[in-house]
Figure (tube, rainbow, N blue to C red):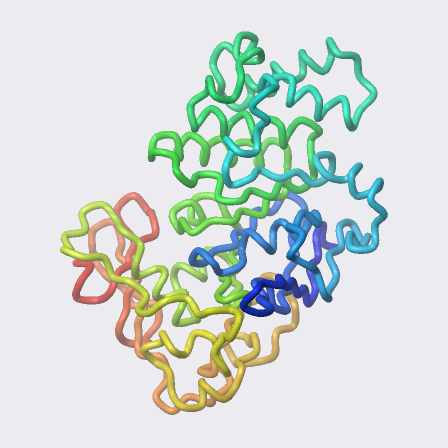
Length: 376
């Protein structure tokens, strides 16, 4: 049994313009010790999907259907006191804006200690000692001194580390990280990536990582879910997603990733804008922006099917699936891009042939992407 199982989840927001579904019938699972990335553009519904796990949606939001099972228990049916006991204890969350997540009128250390006292029967002294130990664990210097600092006295990177320390304070089984590297400079980002990798390796904590940074995904994740306009459009093990992307939206995301040594004057972009979810496009929601779209794409909503063989998704998390009519045999011209892997000596070997785009790997083994003719 998976640690976390999300099945047919639908979340709606009621606005003056109409009903918005930022999460529309998504399903996935996470196993013990696994890191799963949830990627997509801003507005894809990634953060809402994560907040829904702990029923932390704003008043205008509502979970209208589906199930969220943690160790077999449906979290949507838990009474408030049981849910409160679960939050921060078995499932913890690292929020996107660390400065907003921390209470400005309490010291950082006291906020961590309070989390420990809320879930465990410990003395104030024991809670303080554990909080100082956690600050040291996440790499904050002089943790005994920083314990008494207020949030505004910490840098952005240190605030984010303090929020991670708070999330780890009760040794959760699942850590939900919502854009943990957003707004941080690259050196701080690298430190946080290393920290998360060490924590998952040492504690076997499962992680749901919400991000738009595919470099972070490549470093940390075992599997990847690609979300577009509220729906999961691709699911794959991380290596397969980078070396053989199956959905045109994923190809666009990978092609737009900047890389060292890139001599292009402008980065490749995914054309157009994300759709208005008050009135989403008919058929495939990506078809207005897709360079491979055909008339059938506006009429038929593609199911998630295996990219090899076109079989219906069997819910095996290791199976590579994508929501594109290419794999149901409904496209006349197919997907015109190719995937190329470059060895350390610069030689390229084709891994797949769909024409148009290519995938590269540099001498350090880091996975990188670019449009053919623009990335060389």
